[in-house]
Structure formats: C-alpha cells, structure tokens
Length: 177
Image 1 (cartoon, rainbow, N blue to C red):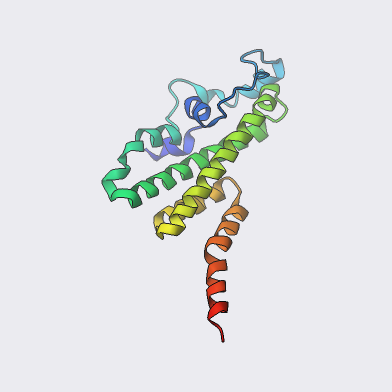
Image 2 (cartoon, rainbow, N blue to C red):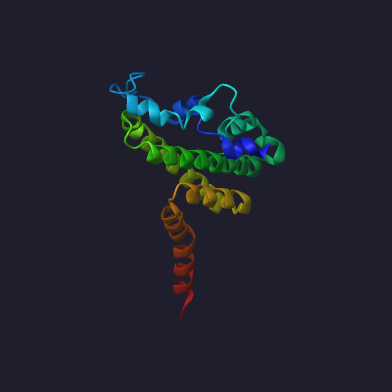
C-alpha cells in the first residue's frame, strides 16, 4: 500500500549502494553513548525487521519494469521516478539527521549523508538534462519533484535557464533585424 511509501526510511542496503565506495575509517559500528541510545528510540519503529518497506525497497523491486512502457522514453521516465522516490527518502534521512544532530553517530554519518546527497544531485541533474533533451513531460515532472524534495530547486532553475531559456533568447536575438 501507499503507507509503506510514506512510512519508510532509507534502507541500509540502498544507503550503502549510494554511499561513497571508500568507507570512512573513523566511523565506528556500535559504541553508542547513553545520549545516543535515547535518540535512537525514535528510530526503532523504522528499523525493526517487521517495519513496512521503504519507498526505496519498493522502487528497487520495480527497477526492471521500465522497458515495458516504450523503450528509452519509458526507461528515462522510470529512472526519473526512481530518483524522485530516492530524493524523498534522502529528505527523510536529512530530517532524522537534523533531529539527532547532537548524537555522535549521526555526526559521524554526516559526511556520508552529504556524499549521498551530492551523488543524488548529480544523477537528478543528468536525468533532468535527458528529460529536457527528449521533451519527456513525465520525466521532467519527476526530476522537478526530486529537486524540490531535497531542497535544491535553484539547481533545477539554473539547468533550465541554461538548457532551455538561454538558447531560446539567443535564437530570438539572432533573428531580430
């Protein structure tokens, strides 16, 4: 159901897949302070084995369905949809990060979270460029929603300004007598 999409958090497997290849040597597994233990209480329902699947888990299961909808355009749309869902999960991850900012293990994860966000931004930028190039309204919408979810609307505006507006203005100015 839709409750799983709204209720999920970023799966560890997907987070690790998006994270940088080189592991941060300083990040410790375990060793939580008593303050950290208190902060983890709010995450326990999300991390339990019986928790509802996250949007990323659902998206990963649907990952191979793109070709059935019409070749490259369908794959571009599915890719943009997946990036939108991942952006939603990264937004949720950033919310949890802001809630636990004082927790040591959250502070240790901060560089990895920023790296994931940077990789996601690059992927969404490439998908938006493709959507503009192919004039795919659906993919364009998903990309714009992805930018909105992670609070990077200015990046989408800049790309649209460079890829669509500037060439149109240049063409009008060149055609003027």
